[in-house]
Length: 241
Image (cartoon, rainbow, N blue to C red; front, side, top):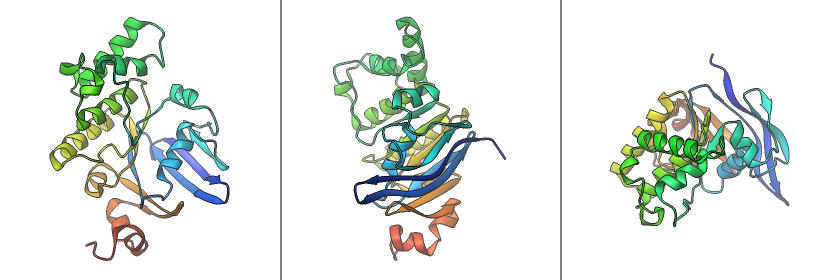
């Protein structure tokens, strides 16, 4: 079995009396793409926030490349090799596409020329090099989503956390985004993704975890998860075939 890039053990987050994530155990191996699904409010983004350093866990731990990184601040987690996108895309509107991606490049260098080189390379990878000088505020939603991925890639992640990068896209745009995520994953970058577009998740991920009310209720291959009665009841609905 490939080496584990990420492991969480009993990962828990409480906000007062509310338990948003309740003892989540998951792992992602080198070069693997894994899905995290569940109804709205299931705790998926809260789990991402603990993994990426935005929240400190109330209990449990996050292990990345064999090191306990629980509670490390987000900039440190990013430097160690975890990049993430956000559900609500907020680029630096007044900056160009290139300048937005250069911000990510500065995670590993303080030299502008080096950051520009990293950004230009990433923009070629995601197919945005032709619009490098366009202002971010003038981009379409699909372009903003792609820019969000590019900013994360510029930090040179070993693990990429994707938070609903397909939300709001039409079928053609989803297909293009799925192709991009597969292409990124094929370079050896591990992917952990939250997504409501199930067909896309199943096309990308070899394993899926399902959360409901913060608790993990199922894990397995896409087929195993979507035929699990608990998952159908909690998330897919009785009409799901």
